[in-house]
Structure formats: C-alpha cells, structure tokens
Length: 451
Image (cartoon, rainbow, N blue to C red; front, top):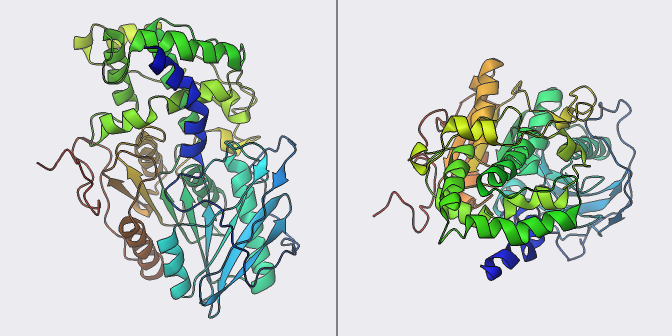
C-alpha cells in the first residue's frame, strides 16, 4: 500500500506533463536539427488584428529555439513572433492552401516551445503542396484562448509573407482541439475546416470533469481533499490517505469499486478499453488538484462540479441520490467563468460554420469521450449538426491514433471542404459499449471485441 501511495504522487507530475504535452502521439516534440533554410526574423501581423480570446498572466518565460529541418521539397521558416516562437514549412510548389497546427497543453515550466505535427500528415501535406504553420503559445498551462490568439497571429504572418491562402485548415490535438473549436466558432471567416483529435471540445467542461473526478473520490473515500490549502497539503492527502481508502486498481477496496463505477459513468459509460484507460489515467486525473490546489489559474478558478450529475451502480451500496447529495460542490469564480471576458473559460457553443471532423479514443479518461457527446449536443442545438463528423477509435490511450486513422480523416476533410461530400462517422449519442469498429485501423491488441 505504501508503494501505491508513493507512486500516486511521485509519478503524478511526470504523468501530467507527459500525457498533456510531448506524448500526444502526434509528433509534437520539438525537432533538434537546425532548419537548412530557416529564418529567424519576425514579421508584423495583419493590420486588422482579430479579437483576443486569451488572457495573459504576464508570467516570465523563455523560448526554446524553434529550429527544425524541412522535409525534402520544402523550406523551413522559423523564429519569434510576438511572444511566441513559430514554425512554417513551405513546399517549393505551394498549392496555396495552409494547415495551422494547434498543440496540446504544455506544463513544463515557463519555457515556450513549438512542435511539428504528425509525421505522416506532414509528409502528406508537403507532397501535395500544402504549407503548414504552428506556434507556441505566449504562455504555458491550460490556455486555449492564448493558443487561439497565437494561431491567428501565425496565420497573419503567413498571409503577410507568402500571400493569402486559398483555404486554411485547422489541426488541433488535445487542448489544441479546444483551440480548434474556439477558432471555428469565433472566426468562421478565417478558416475552411478543422480536424480535432483527442480534443477537449467541451471547452471548460474538460476542467469541470477533472474537478468532478476529484470531488467524487473525496466523497467515496471519506478523505477530505484540502482545496485552497496549497500543494503540500494536497500531496499529503493524495499520497497517504486516498490510496489507502480506495486501494489499487488490481485490488480495489469496496470504496475503490464504487469509485471505479463513478469514473466509468462520469467519463462516458461502458465502452471498449475503459478499464485499460482507467489504469493509464487513474493517477493522472488528480493532477489538476495537485498542480492548482488553490484554484488560482483561470481554468482552475472557472471550474465547477455544481451541475454534475453523478451515477453509480446501485448494487455497490450507494444510490445516485446519495451520491449527488453527498459530494462536495465547488462553485466557479463568476468573474473567471464569464464568456464575454474569458471566451476560453466557458463551455464551447457548437456554433460552427465549417466542416469539423473529430477522432477520439474510447478509453481516453484524461480527455474523455464525453467531450464529443457534449459537442454533438451543442452542434445539433445550434443547427450545425451536419457540419460535425465524429469517429471513435478503440484504444486505451490519450491521443493514440494510427497514421492510417489520422491521414484518412484528413483526406475525408479535404474532400468534404472541396467537393461538399460529407464523410461517414460514428453516432456517439447512444450506447458506446461496442463503438468504434468502423474507423479503428488497425484493431488494437487486446481489443475486447476480438476473441
């Protein structure tokens, strides 16, 4: 038990950083080779700057050199732009179309870094004449608004230097999915379509989920989680008391079995690779409480579980009514959760005007598939359901997609935007217990649907 307790916190920060940033499964790690044709000169942005969606804290930062090596047949352009570092890969024969890549959350201190997108996508783009561009964000952390602002800024840079793109696409990963949704909802005139993978499409609902996760564990375990008392107090609770009460996933206590049931329902219900995904994210999902126990960040202060409806298997000794009556509710800071002041600290709206394709792993419990369910509901309510295609991929991880799955989705998006041919997708509004057979390629080892 002591080993489990130690593992909960000793590895927690590392797990959070790894899962949220460089291990998105999309090749986001910054390249180390110096670009052969790289430039490092900034260019002024467009005259009519778009409205800002993010709120900077003014935290000091450094910038990791954005150098990278271009693929054959392309030139690397990189440097500093405003408060961010950027990359552009421009094919020798540009077809006039541009893809903007939005990376996931960065939690590794105050060093800003920009990565490159999925290698297979990148090779496809350059071979077909597409340029792509990416930016770090001006600060690290869960800052989708700043991500949207930086993406708009690099679009302005490309337009100023190379000419206005004929079409502009978005490709967002994890928090970059939130960035993609924000840009499509707020700037439909600037973008023609988007591909979001493992995306936090619910917006602030993603952070609400992490709060809801922690408060459920608190109630079921009987261990008070000392919100507002600093990281040391929170770490002590997570390290010693919580694991003892819940046990391990291999040997859960009675309370641990109850928590597993709540986690299943909170993240989307019974579905392929749930238990495997829980194993990967069981510790990780307490990361928000450890990283921001006093709820001082914008995302943390705007988070709430006040409206969360919890469910549990009644056979485990607690009813839904008892659960919902007993769980502590954390209210949002109303100034933080103000859509006019902070468009990125409220739920997304689903009001899109351009095609959006999404991919989501069924067993992803860090950014759960409920983000997709919620976004479908919002898009339908906004009259934009026909512009959203969603695909479930049967895998336990966060952002674990094969090249075939991602490239196929990209090809389908281009055909949809150019020819108006809406591709197929999965219905995520009903029973998910066997979802994802149509678009998972290849079938993963240990798939519960294969015998």
